[in-house]
Length: 111
Image 1 (cartoon, helix red, strand yellow):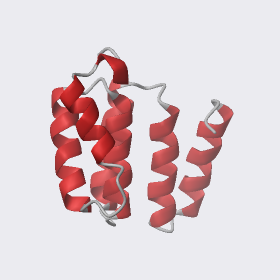
Image 2 (cartoon, one colour):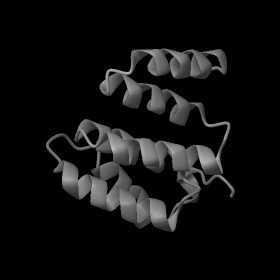
Image 3 (tube, helix red, strand yellow):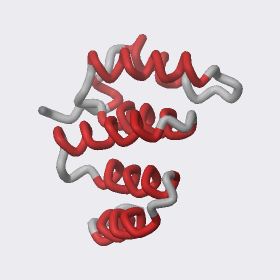
């Protein structure tokens, strides 16, 4: 799968993504919009990472983990997904795995 840059997305999709960052936006609506966008444009990794982060924010660690793992399946070098998995494990109080994943992401250049 090839990565898609933000500028390569259709204008309406770019506008929808920008609207998701407005404070007070309903999280369930944001998750729904991100699911739709990520299914149409799976190569746009930032939307997939944002989806996982929103799922985690809603305390759905299983969904967040699945989303991060799917990103890694398609893009094994995506440090954002590795770092995201670290946050999932930390949210579950699995600090040993969280630390291991965080170190892996940081050692690979994740900031």
